[in-house]
Structure formats: structure tokens, C-alpha cells
Length: 90
Image (cartoon, rainbow, N blue to C red):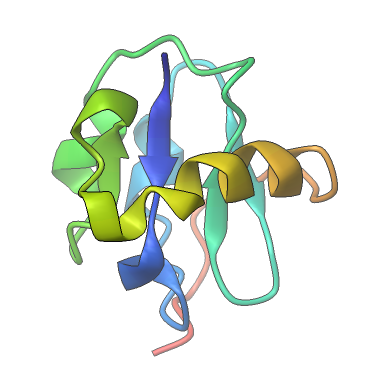
């Protein structure tokens, strides 16, 4: 299991979560962040840092956002790692 970034991140891309991640599992897309499920160690550090509540543990992703589980896995393979704070899009 892993944590998942969902719709609330789209268009804002806060990076508070990135700087607390001990395993560098975040990836940066154009409009949002993604979590690489192969790298995530389920530490829960990122979830509490997200100012828009976009991050869920995989088992807790609401039904209407379940598509983001697969999207994170797909996009993590296509996007570069991000490990430092950046200005949000909003």
C-alpha cells in the first residue's frame, strides 16, 4: 500500500508534503504532484502536511477519487522526482 495524491492538488501543487518525505517518493507533474507507490514507505508524514487535504492512504481514498490510485502509479513512472520546496501554482 502507499499514499495517494488526489484531485485537490491539481492546480495548486503545494510542496509542503515533499520536504517531509523521508524516502523521496514524490514526483512532479505540470499541474500536481504524484506519489510513487513503489517508493512510498507509508510513514504518514506527507498527509498531515498537505494544506489542501489531497493525500490519502490508499485504503482510505474516497470512492469518487479511486482513479487517482492508478494515476499516481502511472504518472510516477513518467514524471521527475521532486525533493525541494517550490512556490505553489495558486
